[in-house]
Length: 555
Ligand code: SF4
Image (cartoon, rainbow, N blue to C red; front, side, top):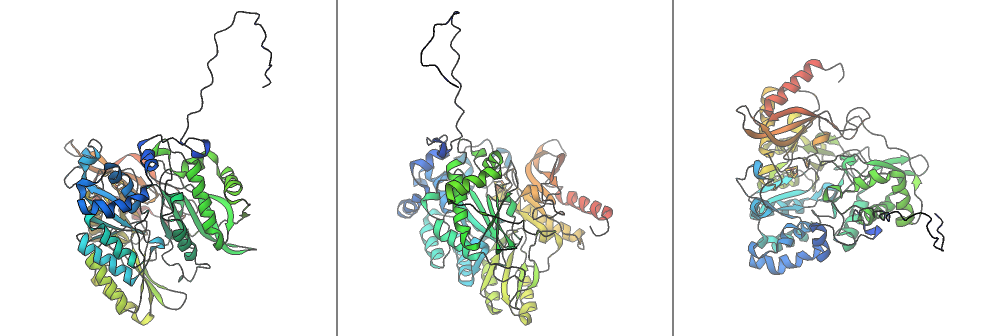
C-alpha cells in the first residue's frame, strides 16, 4: 500500500486509533528469529548443551550418587545419553497424571543402547549380555526401534557400562532426547536376495558424522530415521525415511519420505518425489535435519515434531526449501518404489544371496534376558555365525548359517526361548515398556502381552492368518498403536463392578508397509470399543473367531 509522506488534515473528527495488527504468535522457529526459549525444555537445552552432561555423570554423579544429580540434568539432559529414570514400583496408572515427576521416579534408570541398523556382532552381543547380568538385573528388551533397553541401571555404574559398550563399538549417545535417534535399517541389509543396494554405508556415515555432533543436539524434539532397501521397517512412521527404488535411468537409489510420526497426532510420511543415490543420502538427511532444527516448532512440545511442519508447508515447499537453502542444488525427480502387499518380518528360515541362510526368531513381546542373550551368543558361534540383527518388530535374526546347520540352530534357539516357527500370536504381538518401568504409563503391557500370547496359543493354536497386535501403555503409541490389525491404547476403563481398572481402547485394521492392499493407513479408533485388561484375551479371541468365520477366499 502506498503511503503519503505528507500528513493531511482530517476533514472529519478523528476516529479512535485502530489497534496495530497483532504480530502472529511465534512457534519458536529459530529461522524466523524466535531464539528465546519458550518453554522449560527449550530453556534446559539452551542453558547447557545436553551432550555436556556426560562429563558430569562420569566426574560427579557417578561418585556422589543419585541424590547429587541436578534435576535439570536428571529429567532433561540425561536422555541424550540414553538414560531415563524408571517408574517407582507400585504406583498405579490412575496416579500417573497427578503425581509430580520426582514422586513417580525411582533411583534407577532405563538405559537405551542404540544399535543402528539393528546390526550386532558376537562381541557386542556378549557385552550386552554381560551388562544385563551384572548391572541390569538380567533385563534386556528388544525395542521396536531396534534398540536394546536395560532397566535397574545405577548412575554409579555408568562409566563402566560406557567403557564396555564403547570398547566394542556400541554407544548410548542420543539414544533418547531431542536429537537424531537410532537409524532404523533393514535387518537383512547386505544379505537379502531381493536387495539391489545395501544402505549400510549411509547409515554408518550418518552415525559417525552426526550422532554426538552439537550442530544437531538441540532439535525441537526427537528425530526418527529409517534407511532400507526393502520395505521391512515401519518407514511411514519416521521423520525421514529412505526406501530403495530402481531408477530407470540412474539405477538403484533411494526414494525419500518426510513427516511421519504416530503418538497422539498420527501422520504418515509423504514422498518428496526425489531420487537420491547412496552417496548423497547423508547430505540429504542432514539437510532435512537442518530444516527441522531451524524451522521446526518449539513453542509447544506436542507440536514440535517435523510432521506438523510438513503438514503446514506441504511437500512441494519442503522440497524447495531443502534444495535452495540446505543443499544448494536441485534433486532428481524419482519414481515411486514398489511396495509389497504386506510388511516383511523375516521370521523363519530364509536363503541369503550368498547361499547361506538367515533365521528369524521371536522372543515374546521383545523381552529377553542377559542369560538368554549369552546363550544365544554361544549358539550363534557354535553354528558358525558372527552376526545377529534386531528387527523393528521386537524380533531377532541370526545371519550366515550354513544350510546343513540351520535346523540345528532352529532347535538350539527354541531351547533358549527364541522361536523360529512361532504361532501367529507370538509372531505378531508387540508391547511397549508399560507400567512396569515407564513413568508415563497407565497400564501394564509386557506381562499382559505375554499372557495374551499364551492364552491365544492355548485356545487358537492353529490360527493361520497374519495378525498384528500392538499393546501400548498410554496414548504415546511407542509400540505403534494406530498401525496394527489390533492396536491397543492403554487407559483406565470402567470394570464390571463400576470401578476404574486397567484397560485398552481398541483400534482395528491399521497396517504399515501397505499391509492392506496398497493403502497404508491407520486403524479405526472405535470410540465405544474398550476392553478391560483382564478380559483382553477373550476379547481378541472373539475378534479372531469372528474374522475366521467371516473371511473371504484368499483373505
Ligand atoms: Fe511408556 Fe506410553 Fe511409550 Fe508405552 S506408549 S513406553 S507407556 S510412553
